[in-house]
Image (cartoon, rainbow, N blue to C red):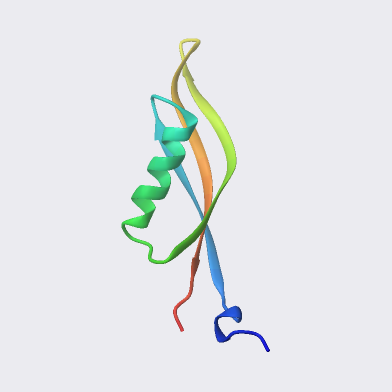
Length: 73
């Protein structure tokens, strides 16, 4: 018999982190800042990475992260 917690519902939202250092730093920032207002985060999946370019030079790294969290019952 399945455990009671196996029947769950999750929501997925996209957030974008920005960093002048790296894609990894941008992704970490996205998760940490979102965690301050979303509870019970479960999975963070990097879905896209890109760079901001100004005058032919990379000025920022952007990482899009799909975050999932569990609805409370």
